[in-house]
Amino acid sequence: MATANGWVDDFVRARSLPASWHARAGVHLDTLAGWLNDSGFRLIGISGAQGTGKSSVSDYLAAALEKRYGRRACVLSLDDYYVSKSERLELAEHVHPLLATRGVPGTHDIDGLTGTVEALLGESGGELRIPVFDKGSDDRLPAERWRKAAPSPDFVLLEGWCIGARAQTGAELEAPINALEATEDPDGSWRRWVNEQLALRYEPLYDKLDALVFLQVPGLAAVLRWRGLQEHKLIAATGKGMSDAEIARFIGHYERLTRNCLQLLPGTADACIELDDDHNVASLRFRSA
Image 1 (cartoon, helix red, strand yellow):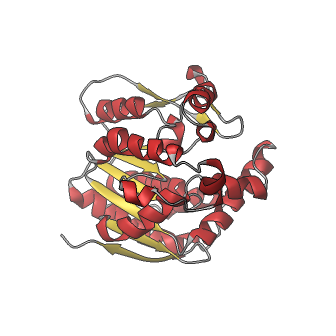
Image 2 (cartoon, rainbow, N blue to C red; image 1 turned 90 degrees about the horizontal axis):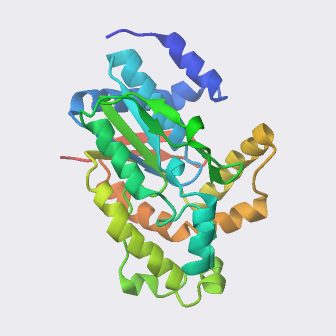
């Protein structure tokens, strides 16, 4: 197995991560990459709330698998499969106004994502095009700006905030969980529709996962703070982004499923990365077979 510490330094610099990042987080991810290399798995879900660092974790695992083991991984982000802004506005008009906001189940092109996953895992041959969503403009980029991916990678790493989430019961949906639901979804029609989309369209894709990795946060307050840091970086880079008040309302759309994942996934995920309140990796644990 070849070692090349230079690529780790390059990764940390390119991501503007703290110099101590590898000592605190990368060593655990090296262990996780080794586990994946030995696992025989191909389709891996990487789940975690907003701002947990799913993108960095996924990209590092892909780099480690290549640099340390000579294995090729393709990273897919659920975020890149949002439907277009115009499609969300149509959903807002015909289903519920809250669907104008991207993120919840029902605002993604799950059929397109499933087709991409199946093409990558198959033997179709030929180059694939992966959509790219621009959060600054809140819309999908034109097809000519989509990224390219070679077919048949050794691993497909599918990352997203609700990967692995499971639908709730009708009784669980009855009472609003926050101010957003109480004031903007008082009859529960939005959350019931979202829950139905999760059950009918998302869970069949999640059932195809060979393994699930969960980034466990200490609580929702940390999610709000970390998402704020993410948005401030976006504003600095592009001049576009949400204010702190807009972030708080935005996160309210996801609180129900975030709480559901925090309750369910630490016990069911195949690997759990526990984050402390300062966004450091506190531990990595694997579920017993």
